[in-house]
Each structure stands twice: as C-alpha cells, then as structure tokens.
Length: 65
Image (tube, rainbow, N blue to C red; front, side):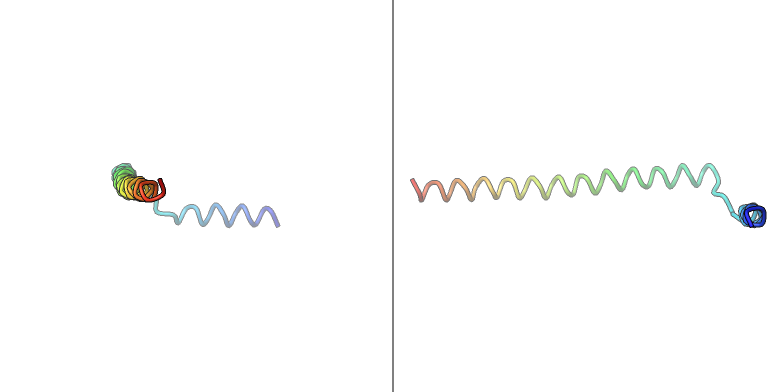
C-alpha cells in the first residue's frame, strides 16, 4: 500500500507546473504591498475611532462634572 502511494505521489508531482522565479518574486511583492496597504487602512480607522472615543469621553466628563 505505501509503495503504491509513494509511486502515485511521485507521478502527481511530475505533473505540477511550478512557478518561475519571476512569478514568485512578483507574487511576494504583491503580498507585501497589500499587507502594508491594509495595515495603513486599519491604522487610519483605529486613529479615527480613537479620536472619536476621546472626544466622546471629554463631552461626557464635561456634562458630569
């Protein structure tokens, strides 16, 4: 059973079309750029919400006392 499994696995791996070095570099750069962009968007949303939270608590504290 194991012998047939490894034979089939080797046969399937021969059919795989591996990406070129250039494709790997392009995909890696794309992922890095997208991670940076999404991080900046999340940072912007976080800063806006933090600013709103501070203003809201200042407004509440001015009414309380």
